Image 1 (cartoon, rainbow, N blue to C red):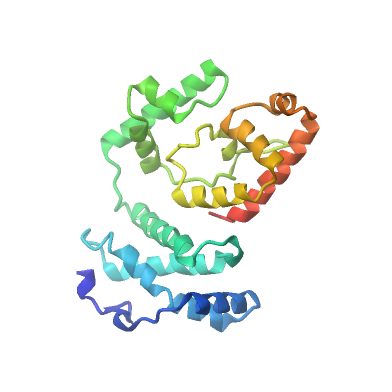
Image 2 (spheres, rainbow, N blue to C red):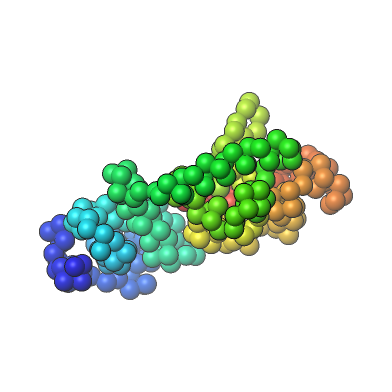
Length: 260
Protein backbone atom coordinates (compact mmCIF):
# COMPACT_ATOMS: atom_id res chain seq x y z
CA UNK A 1 0.00 0.00 0.00
CA UNK A 2 1.27 3.45 -0.89
CA UNK A 3 0.38 5.04 2.41
CA UNK A 4 2.51 2.46 4.25
CA UNK A 5 5.60 3.01 2.11
CA UNK A 6 8.29 5.31 3.46
CA UNK A 7 10.99 4.88 0.80
CA UNK A 8 10.29 5.05 -2.92
CA UNK A 9 13.13 4.69 -5.41
CA UNK A 10 15.58 5.38 -2.60
CA UNK A 11 13.82 8.59 -1.52
CA UNK A 12 12.55 9.01 2.03
CA UNK A 13 9.01 10.18 1.33
CA UNK A 14 8.22 10.64 5.02
CA UNK A 15 10.56 13.61 5.39
CA UNK A 16 10.00 15.41 2.11
CA UNK A 17 10.55 19.16 2.17
CA UNK A 18 7.56 21.42 1.62
CA UNK A 19 8.14 24.84 0.07
CA UNK A 20 6.08 27.91 0.88
CA UNK A 21 4.58 30.04 -1.89
CA UNK A 22 7.19 32.74 -1.22
CA UNK A 23 10.02 30.21 -1.40
CA UNK A 24 8.65 28.89 -4.68
CA UNK A 25 8.49 32.39 -6.16
CA UNK A 26 12.07 33.15 -5.13
CA UNK A 27 13.38 29.83 -6.45
CA UNK A 28 11.67 30.23 -9.80
CA UNK A 29 13.09 33.73 -10.16
CA UNK A 30 16.58 32.35 -9.50
CA UNK A 31 15.94 29.48 -11.90
CA UNK A 32 14.99 31.92 -14.64
CA UNK A 33 18.34 33.60 -14.06
CA UNK A 34 20.12 30.29 -14.72
CA UNK A 35 20.58 28.94 -11.19
CA UNK A 36 20.70 25.13 -11.49
CA UNK A 37 20.59 24.64 -7.73
CA UNK A 38 17.22 26.43 -7.58
CA UNK A 39 15.82 24.04 -10.17
CA UNK A 40 16.87 21.05 -8.06
CA UNK A 41 15.35 22.62 -4.95
CA UNK A 42 12.03 23.15 -6.72
CA UNK A 43 11.96 19.53 -7.85
CA UNK A 44 12.84 18.19 -4.39
CA UNK A 45 10.32 20.51 -2.76
CA UNK A 46 7.44 19.27 -4.91
CA UNK A 47 7.85 15.50 -4.79
CA UNK A 48 4.72 15.36 -2.66
CA UNK A 49 2.76 16.28 -5.78
CA UNK A 50 3.94 13.01 -7.34
CA UNK A 51 2.83 11.10 -4.25
CA UNK A 52 -0.61 12.72 -4.35
CA UNK A 53 -1.06 11.64 -7.98
CA UNK A 54 0.16 8.10 -7.25
CA UNK A 55 -2.78 7.56 -4.89
CA UNK A 56 -4.97 7.15 -7.97
CA UNK A 57 -2.95 4.11 -9.05
CA UNK A 58 -1.95 2.32 -5.84
CA UNK A 59 -4.57 -0.44 -6.16
CA UNK A 60 -3.77 -1.35 -9.77
CA UNK A 61 -1.03 -3.83 -8.97
CA UNK A 62 1.66 -1.77 -10.70
CA UNK A 63 5.21 -1.35 -9.42
CA UNK A 64 4.83 1.80 -7.36
CA UNK A 65 8.55 2.60 -7.56
CA UNK A 66 8.36 2.61 -11.35
CA UNK A 67 5.31 4.86 -11.31
CA UNK A 68 7.03 7.20 -8.86
CA UNK A 69 10.01 7.56 -11.18
CA UNK A 70 7.73 8.20 -14.16
CA UNK A 71 5.78 10.75 -12.14
CA UNK A 72 9.05 12.49 -11.29
CA UNK A 73 9.75 12.79 -15.02
CA UNK A 74 6.45 14.64 -15.36
CA UNK A 75 7.38 16.86 -12.41
CA UNK A 76 10.73 17.74 -13.97
CA UNK A 77 9.00 18.64 -17.25
CA UNK A 78 6.59 20.85 -15.32
CA UNK A 79 9.44 22.63 -13.53
CA UNK A 80 11.31 23.19 -16.79
CA UNK A 81 8.28 24.52 -18.68
CA UNK A 82 6.43 26.48 -15.98
CA UNK A 83 6.13 30.22 -16.48
CA UNK A 84 5.38 32.00 -13.16
CA UNK A 85 4.07 35.03 -15.04
CA UNK A 86 0.90 33.21 -16.18
CA UNK A 87 -0.56 33.62 -12.70
CA UNK A 88 -1.33 29.94 -12.10
CA UNK A 89 -0.10 28.04 -9.04
CA UNK A 90 2.69 25.62 -9.86
CA UNK A 91 0.76 22.68 -8.41
CA UNK A 92 -2.18 23.48 -10.70
CA UNK A 93 0.16 23.35 -13.67
CA UNK A 94 2.24 20.36 -12.54
CA UNK A 95 -0.38 17.81 -11.48
CA UNK A 96 -1.87 17.33 -15.00
CA UNK A 97 1.65 16.88 -16.40
CA UNK A 98 2.55 14.30 -13.76
CA UNK A 99 -0.73 12.48 -14.30
CA UNK A 100 -0.31 12.59 -18.07
CA UNK A 101 3.21 11.17 -17.87
CA UNK A 102 2.04 8.22 -15.76
CA UNK A 103 -0.96 7.52 -18.00
CA UNK A 104 1.26 7.69 -21.07
CA UNK A 105 3.66 5.20 -19.47
CA UNK A 106 0.82 2.82 -18.63
CA UNK A 107 -0.65 3.17 -22.11
CA UNK A 108 2.70 2.57 -23.82
CA UNK A 109 3.17 -0.55 -21.74
CA UNK A 110 -0.33 -1.78 -22.61
CA UNK A 111 -1.46 -1.43 -19.01
CA UNK A 112 -4.32 0.90 -19.89
CA UNK A 113 -6.62 -1.25 -21.97
CA UNK A 114 -9.45 0.37 -23.82
CA UNK A 115 -12.59 -1.73 -23.77
CA UNK A 116 -13.93 -3.18 -27.02
CA UNK A 117 -17.13 -1.18 -26.68
CA UNK A 118 -15.21 2.12 -26.38
CA UNK A 119 -13.07 1.26 -29.39
CA UNK A 120 -16.22 0.44 -31.35
CA UNK A 121 -17.88 3.72 -30.34
CA UNK A 122 -14.76 5.70 -31.27
CA UNK A 123 -14.64 4.02 -34.68
CA UNK A 124 -18.31 4.82 -35.31
CA UNK A 125 -17.78 8.42 -34.16
CA UNK A 126 -14.92 8.92 -36.62
CA UNK A 127 -17.00 7.47 -39.44
CA UNK A 128 -19.93 9.72 -38.50
CA UNK A 129 -17.65 12.75 -38.32
CA UNK A 130 -16.34 12.12 -41.83
CA UNK A 131 -19.83 11.51 -43.19
CA UNK A 132 -21.31 14.62 -41.56
CA UNK A 133 -18.39 16.81 -42.64
CA UNK A 134 -19.06 15.88 -46.27
CA UNK A 135 -22.79 16.52 -46.11
CA UNK A 136 -22.60 19.67 -43.96
CA UNK A 137 -19.56 21.23 -45.57
CA UNK A 138 -17.95 21.89 -42.19
CA UNK A 139 -16.66 20.11 -39.11
CA UNK A 140 -19.56 18.69 -37.05
CA UNK A 141 -19.81 19.34 -33.33
CA UNK A 142 -19.64 16.59 -30.73
CA UNK A 143 -23.39 17.00 -30.22
CA UNK A 144 -24.08 16.47 -33.92
CA UNK A 145 -21.91 13.37 -34.02
CA UNK A 146 -23.61 12.04 -30.89
CA UNK A 147 -27.06 12.72 -32.35
CA UNK A 148 -26.14 10.82 -35.51
CA UNK A 149 -25.09 7.84 -33.39
CA UNK A 150 -28.04 8.25 -30.99
CA UNK A 151 -25.60 8.38 -28.08
CA UNK A 152 -25.01 10.89 -25.26
CA UNK A 153 -22.28 13.43 -26.15
CA UNK A 154 -20.37 12.44 -23.00
CA UNK A 155 -20.11 8.85 -24.22
CA UNK A 156 -18.69 9.96 -27.57
CA UNK A 157 -16.13 12.21 -25.87
CA UNK A 158 -15.11 9.43 -23.49
CA UNK A 159 -14.63 6.97 -26.35
CA UNK A 160 -12.53 9.36 -28.42
CA UNK A 161 -10.51 10.48 -25.41
CA UNK A 162 -9.74 6.87 -24.43
CA UNK A 163 -8.51 5.97 -27.90
CA UNK A 164 -6.42 9.02 -28.72
CA UNK A 165 -3.88 11.18 -26.92
CA UNK A 166 -5.11 14.74 -26.34
CA UNK A 167 -3.91 17.37 -28.81
CA UNK A 168 -2.88 20.92 -28.18
CA UNK A 169 -5.43 23.51 -29.27
CA UNK A 170 -2.65 24.98 -31.37
CA UNK A 171 -1.40 21.83 -33.07
CA UNK A 172 -1.59 22.24 -36.83
CA UNK A 173 -3.89 19.61 -38.30
CA UNK A 174 -3.33 20.84 -41.87
CA UNK A 175 -0.82 23.18 -43.43
CA UNK A 176 -0.14 24.49 -46.91
CA UNK A 177 2.19 27.17 -48.20
CA UNK A 178 0.11 29.93 -46.59
CA UNK A 179 -1.81 29.51 -43.35
CA UNK A 180 -1.92 26.35 -41.21
CA UNK A 181 -5.25 25.06 -39.92
CA UNK A 182 -5.12 24.63 -36.15
CA UNK A 183 -7.18 22.31 -34.01
CA UNK A 184 -8.75 25.44 -32.50
CA UNK A 185 -10.31 26.08 -35.93
CA UNK A 186 -12.43 22.97 -35.34
CA UNK A 187 -13.58 23.80 -31.82
CA UNK A 188 -17.22 24.75 -32.38
CA UNK A 189 -18.61 24.13 -28.91
CA UNK A 190 -17.36 25.85 -25.77
CA UNK A 191 -18.66 22.90 -23.72
CA UNK A 192 -16.53 20.33 -25.58
CA UNK A 193 -15.29 18.15 -22.73
CA UNK A 194 -12.54 16.60 -24.83
CA UNK A 195 -10.41 19.66 -24.11
CA UNK A 196 -8.50 19.20 -20.89
CA UNK A 197 -9.40 21.37 -17.90
CA UNK A 198 -5.89 22.77 -17.85
CA UNK A 199 -6.18 23.93 -21.44
CA UNK A 200 -9.52 25.53 -20.62
CA UNK A 201 -8.01 27.33 -17.63
CA UNK A 202 -5.06 28.74 -19.54
CA UNK A 203 -7.23 29.57 -22.55
CA UNK A 204 -9.65 31.49 -20.35
CA UNK A 205 -6.79 33.47 -18.81
CA UNK A 206 -5.31 34.24 -22.23
CA UNK A 207 -8.67 35.36 -23.63
CA UNK A 208 -9.08 37.67 -20.65
CA UNK A 209 -5.96 39.57 -21.68
CA UNK A 210 -7.07 40.22 -25.26
CA UNK A 211 -8.63 43.47 -26.45
CA UNK A 212 -12.45 43.60 -26.78
CA UNK A 213 -12.14 43.55 -30.58
CA UNK A 214 -9.82 40.51 -30.54
CA UNK A 215 -12.19 38.68 -28.18
CA UNK A 216 -15.15 39.41 -30.44
CA UNK A 217 -13.31 38.15 -33.52
CA UNK A 218 -12.23 34.89 -31.88
CA UNK A 219 -15.70 34.33 -30.43
CA UNK A 220 -17.38 34.81 -33.80
CA UNK A 221 -14.75 32.74 -35.63
CA UNK A 222 -14.31 29.73 -33.36
CA UNK A 223 -17.45 29.61 -31.25
CA UNK A 224 -19.84 31.15 -33.76
CA UNK A 225 -18.43 29.30 -36.75
CA UNK A 226 -18.26 32.41 -38.97
CA UNK A 227 -15.75 32.90 -41.77
CA UNK A 228 -13.38 35.88 -41.76
CA UNK A 229 -15.50 37.52 -44.45
CA UNK A 230 -18.65 37.10 -42.35
CA UNK A 231 -16.89 38.46 -39.25
CA UNK A 232 -15.65 41.46 -41.23
CA UNK A 233 -19.16 42.23 -42.47
CA UNK A 234 -20.63 41.90 -38.98
CA UNK A 235 -18.02 44.19 -37.41
CA UNK A 236 -17.76 46.72 -40.23
CA UNK A 237 -14.06 46.18 -40.88
CA UNK A 238 -12.09 44.61 -43.71
CA UNK A 239 -11.30 40.91 -44.04
CA UNK A 240 -7.61 41.82 -43.96
CA UNK A 241 -8.08 43.49 -40.57
CA UNK A 242 -9.90 40.44 -39.25
CA UNK A 243 -7.11 38.19 -40.48
CA UNK A 244 -4.39 40.36 -38.91
CA UNK A 245 -6.15 40.66 -35.54
CA UNK A 246 -7.01 36.96 -35.49
CA UNK A 247 -3.43 35.89 -36.20
CA UNK A 248 -2.10 38.25 -33.53
CA UNK A 249 -4.56 36.97 -30.94
CA UNK A 250 -3.82 33.32 -31.72
CA UNK A 251 -0.08 33.97 -31.53
CA UNK A 252 -0.55 35.55 -28.09
CA UNK A 253 -2.72 32.66 -26.85
CA UNK A 254 -0.25 30.08 -28.15
CA UNK A 255 2.58 31.85 -26.34
CA UNK A 256 0.50 32.08 -23.15
CA UNK A 257 -0.45 28.40 -23.16
CA UNK A 258 3.04 27.16 -23.97
CA UNK A 259 3.20 23.40 -24.75
CA UNK A 260 0.15 22.36 -22.76
